[in-house]
Length: 445
Image: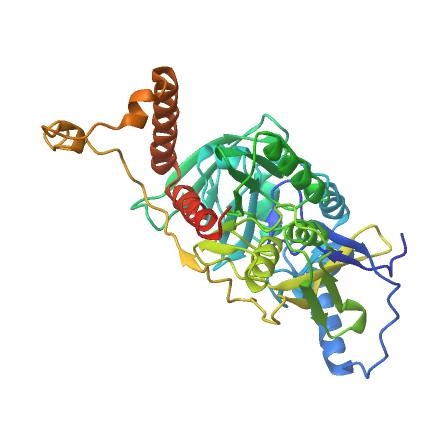
C-alpha cells in the first residue's frame, strides 16, 4: 500500500480494547503532497535543541526512534481527542476490527480529564457482561492508577491474551464508592446486528456497532423477522453503539430511507467532501420505525439516527447522544505505521453538524428501574357488567367456541406477562414498543 493512499475512518469515538479503531468506506484517490509553506525555522531549531538536551541530560538513555515517536504522538494528541499515531501493531489491530472479530474486553474508551472514559461497552463481551456502563471512568487497571497514562498506555494495560484476568476500578456517578470489576479477556466475536419479534407484528433490531458486514446482517435479520409473521412496525436499538464503519451506517440508513441524502462529509481538502444518498426501496414499506438512542450512541450510530430523524422516517426516542460529528482519515506511512487525523465533519440531511452537540431525541425516555406491583387492591371487589343482576347476555359470546376463547385468553395472558417482564428488564424498550404500537394504530397498519 502506498504511504500516500488515504483511508477514511469509521467515525469511531475512541479506542476499542484489543482493536484500535475501525476503517470506513475505503480508499480515496492518492493525496497530493502538500504545498511547501515557509517552515518556522526558529521553532524547528528549538525542537532540535530540546531533542538534543533530552538525549544528553535525561536520567536514562532514550533512543532517537522513541523520542521521535513520542514527539509525533504528542503532536497529534494535541489536536483533538480523535487524532493519534498508530504504530505497526495498532494499525494492524485497526484493520482487524472491520471484520467484527478481535481480542480484548469489548469496550469503547477515550481519554477525558486524565482518566479513561467509557463511551460504551459492546454487547455480549466481557465488559458488558461484567456490568461496565457508558459514562464510567476507569481509575485503576489492576493495581495501577490510570492518571498520568496516555490512552495507548492504558489500553495496552487492559489488553492481553484471551482467558487472562484483569481488574478494573471505575467511578460511576450513581455510585457512592468506586466499583471493582473482575474480568477475563476474551476473543470478541461481535454479531453486530440481531433481531427478533417482541410480540406478534412488532419487531426488534439491535445494532451494537458498525462493522464491514453490518449492512448485510441487518437485511438478513429483517428477512428472518418478516418470516415470523406480518411486520407492522420495528424498534431499532442503537443504544451504547460506539460507531464504526461509515459505509455500514449508510447501508443501515438506506434500508429504511427510500430516497434523498443520508449524510455528507466536508473538510478543508476537497477530496474529503462526499455526499451519500439513499437508493430506492424501504425494507419496512413505510411502516412505523422507532429508534432508541442514549449517551453511548456515537458517531456512525448518530449518522443513522440523524438521517432517520431529518427525513422524518423514524421517531427518535431515549436520551441525548454522544455528539461525535467528525471524520478521521488514516494515512499509512512507509514503516507500516499510520497517523489517524481528523479531516472533516459530517452533516445530517438537513445540514446540521452534531459535533459536541449530539442528537436530541424526539421523545425523551430516561432509564428507570420498575418492579411489579403487589396487585390491584380492588380485584374481586370491583363489579363489572357481567356481575350485574338482570344484565343482557352477549349472544355472540354464547355462540363462540369455548376452546377458541380459552386460546385467545392464554395468548393475551402471555403477551401481558411478556410486557411486564420487558417493563421490568428494559423500561426504555417497553416504552418504545408502546409508542410503536400507537404509531401503527394511528397510521392504519
